[in-house]
Length: 273
Image: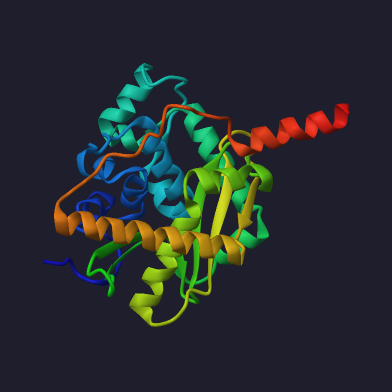
């Protein structure tokens, strides 16, 4: 039995994660191996996850952040003042001074970015859940848009250590953000019957000065993302129908450095010659 299909406003995060179907994070596990999806345990909430939720709230729902979160003057979570506020508001809504400073710094940096604010001040909705059925495989897909403007522009926040393009492109590859682009664009078109106007990533550095930049993938990157989205989804559908979840192939035990390190070495040799 499927869940309610289409866009769903105001769905709590825990409820979204309890829905049936496959998400992008599920496809990431499938890409590693079907066994990692089937037998991997959902990680319990960590402080980093709670801070990530707070950052999203500060960027996409600033009024709710100001109303619900408490930034203490405590340097640690063991301080008496922090414990007092935690008892009143809950640990996930209570921030240390340093945590609050970091989140506010990221928020301020983004507020000073004209392209980001043009999207965030347009008519739209934050934390919008989307559920659909893939017509090819019959698999239910679930997605959660960080921000979706009424005109069909999606903005997804990515906190990073380095927002420069040559560095962030590695994060895109490592965390398969190009697959997310393809999946969310597919879901949007399936629900609305129209193509997504744009899927953009808002990369913001965790550490001061919290440099940020709005990025959009080129066409080849989108094509690659769509290829792996469909490949992973078909693999999941096949494993589900056969109830077989193989482990990954590990090769013959010989391992080499990544291509980029080999290319760097070759360039160094050319300079020496």
